Length: 130
Image 1 (cartoon, helix red, strand yellow):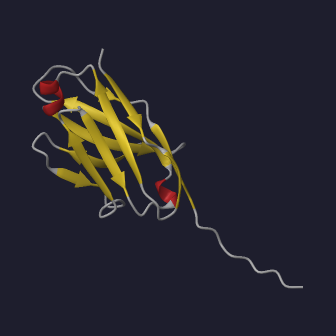
Image 2 (cartoon, rainbow, N blue to C red; image 1 turned 45 degrees about the vertical axis):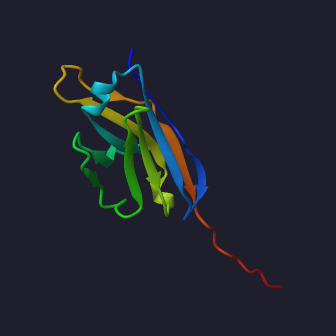
């Protein structure tokens, strides 16, 4: 049974970086290669939003709010999809999930279970004087 398993999430300070991974277990290589690959994110109480996508031909697209900061990539041999996230902001905090949709097969779509990314602010210096 095909499973998508994400990893790489965690807590990071604003301005930091993370790399998310999505492993397509038990997926035939030809099916993986023929799939569109996407990363979504969702914050509780809000709709899930598309972050980055890669077509079968390798063309990448990004949501405006991550352009220049995030990069989607793949490794066909390992059947992995990655999301490199740089210059993280507190508003990037969300559960990130990968999605694969094989093209040319009647297989539907596959989703991972998601991985939590938490970005905490750099804080504000407070000076207390007597």
